[in-house]
Image (cartoon, rainbow, N blue to C red; front, side, top):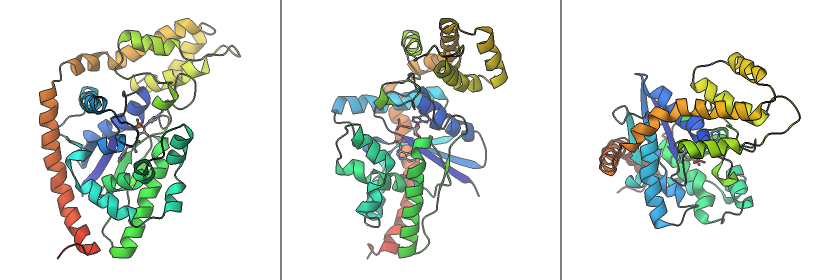
Amino acid sequence: MKKRILTGLQPSGTLHIGNYFGSLKPLIDLMGQEDNEVLLMVADYHALTSLRDTAELKTNIYNIVRDYLAAGVDPKKVILFRQSDNQDHMELGWILNCLVTVPFLMQAHSYKDKVAKGLEPNAGLFTYPMLMAADITLYNTDIVPVGEDQRQHLEYTREAVTKFNNAYGKILKEPKELIVAGVGVVPGTDGQKMSKSYKNTIPFFGTHEETQKAVMSIVTDSSGDRPVNVYNIHNVIYRALGKSQDELDALYHEHAGKYKVLKDILVDDIEIVIGGMREKRAQITDDEIRHILKDGAARAKAISNTMMQKIRAAVGITL
Ligand code: AMP
Ligand code: TRP
């Protein structure tokens, strides 16, 4: 049996290094393996929970697909699709919403964090975990590569599966999260988790100047020879270059106390990781993107429609 892998990213901003290493790269690494079937979704309905700008959302959707492709997602090997192209997500999301309680959803860290940061507590944001559970279970997904911040959403998904299966029979599959050690929480320029809402990101496809500006803004303190925040980000980049932590330690030892030199080296190393991808990215046309998404939508629907028929029959909404 093939293992099904699925992840999604919201087109709500610019792809940053944390998104790439936390969820996209683990998915790309699994893409090449023959016994895997991989799906990658543009979670555009999810983005509506925080974004209310027509032009921006539309641009973000094109941009995120461009990012995926440039980062190495092969649309022949991956079903690359947009959530809003497949209404089964909405339908199953509703069914799952009817199985969980308001107090249960109120415990979600992600919801509480977002509201604490000043995001409007709209009903979409509140019920978001059940739309995500639908995204995953519609495709009988086994593995979901995500960052640490999504761990609880996977627990919520499993809880929804249990509730559904107890009510209607064993139809939905319990997925597992894949959180890769060392990149589950990529730190940002201030040492906290890298996140667009903390304004501490290093953009993945920034221009050389943007990368430089972000790296120079990494907060350093003078308590030791090693700038910890620079080192921790460098550590993630070093892995991507296939270099060891010992090599990184040697580098930081050699340049002990020279923060500017270490930051310059980090900028160069980021350039090595993304330079080629950036060139590829510039060549991807909007037409190509529309074509890939259309094809992906048809392939995604072929899987979910069968599942949805079983779900409807189990629930009793067929005649
Ligand atoms: P978001 O941009 O919040 O939609 O996140 C998209 C994906 O990137 C999710 O799987 C997140 O868990 C992951 N992610 C976001 N920020 C980080 C981070 N700082 N470190 C690791 N993974 C992250
Ligand atoms: N909730 C995820 C995030 O904010 C995005 C997402 C939506 C997702 N649906 C998904 C991730 C399904 C994995 C699987 O990052």
